[in-house]
Length: 376
Image (cartoon, rainbow, N blue to C red; front, side, top):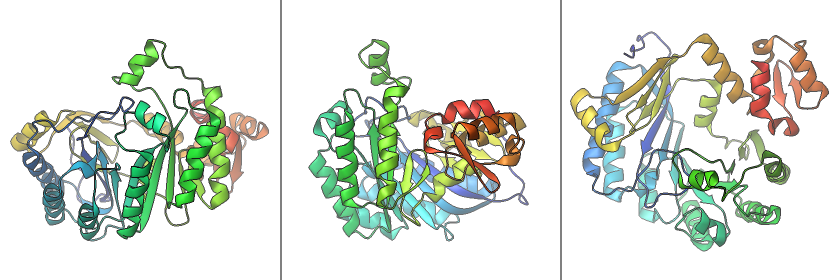
């Protein structure tokens, strides 16, 4: 049973909303998602707003960042988007929001839909391009073309979003380093405010994992390293700050919402499969849209599994996440600069000390997970 944080605790300032609908299921994606099918989307939206209402009545909230992920949030119709956004504005304390992000796929929005997002407070659009190569778009199950992605990006720019991002993937099956270089160059030519570059991983319960297990696909961290290093060289050279292993931003455009995760701030998650972590209490909503709706209608929430993070759990997460960032981890968390492991990292040029923090070098970021384990 989750204990509601008392009113005198620090309010929760970060909100995640999960929209599970996708036009088609990408074979690599491990997030909870499905095609809309026969789902009553108006009933789904009513459940989301009802869950938000319950949260506002039981948890101290002062929302500063909002992130709509999925799935494909922009797959919602104009009418359903307005219904949902109006409902959340009427239910949650959103007057202090300073960053509001929507994940979006090309072909899922038009000028009118973007206007709805802007009118209701959206400030960032993160466009899931993944590749500018038709061959790899087909492999990834994407239903947009390179030309369509470019048109979607330009449309978003014309709609006045203060911050526009492009998401890319690398180390795809059969991808060469020159093809990855082309993807980076094409992205840089568009001059987005934010660029995310994700190393393909093989997730459970995906088609790609099945193909990996059959031996059709292979993964080799040593072979993936040149892809990471190329991005880490070329993108900062154009004025982007490499502020987290997978993320680059122009000054003032780093994701405040994701940075809150990496710092260990409390956050509230709404929607099926959404995770909440509030003052070391963590719960995950039911990862089933139909059951989620029924649970909210019956109990005003849809919490499934729950846990209270121990001090060791908390420290482990903080180390793993903070090491991914350019700021790094506080030296006091790892016993100070004279810790033998810290000294070894410095000698191998895997890390450096910045005042009170230990941060990984470009070389060290290739081994971030291993280094985090060594520092525990």
